[in-house]
Length: 219
Ligand SMILES: [Zn+2]
Image (cartoon, rainbow, N blue to C red; front, top):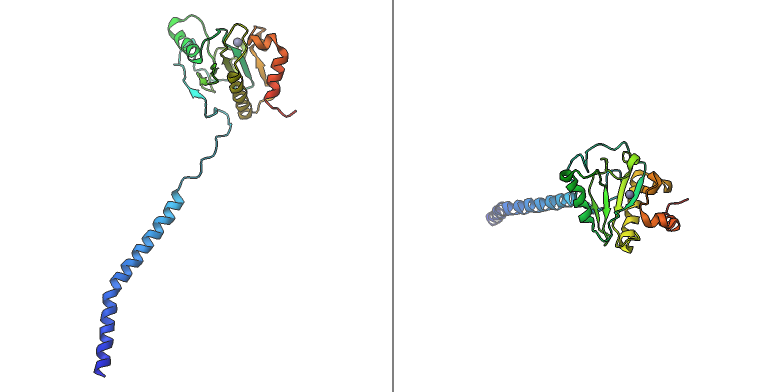
């Protein structure tokens, strides 16, 4: 009897001694579970590719905004975006950076009023010089409701390089998607003022039609 009592007593003692360890183990397990659940919850969602929306540009566009100044970036809000106007720089062999710096320099030289939202380089790099909700000085009477794209060209013919043309197609597609523009809203400077700009597409209207076809509008 007394042996049984002693044994029971020993078991109870034993259990009591073990309990703190058991409960510590349970606490650690719960903490670990909580941390795992928390980490699953806070894990960032897989990154989605950016979609064209008003005010956005493709991720490969390089932002290099002009300083606000009366000669190339007046800071005037656009009335809206009802078209995209394509231009050529008219300066054979010059780069996007050179043309961008020329626009920026007008703040000091006061030579003329000129700029564009975008400049496409000879290698297809695209610079953004003016925000999408501000007026640029490029398309005369359509400055207030269009976005302008200047394209660099290697020679006097004004023909774009393959890289420039590809970048131009992709940029115009993005802007048309973002602003819900149709094929007839993609125009040449020539269509606004009759100026020979972009020269190659004024000289070769069939090539301009091909360019518009390449934008892939569904009829
Ligand atoms: Zn032009």
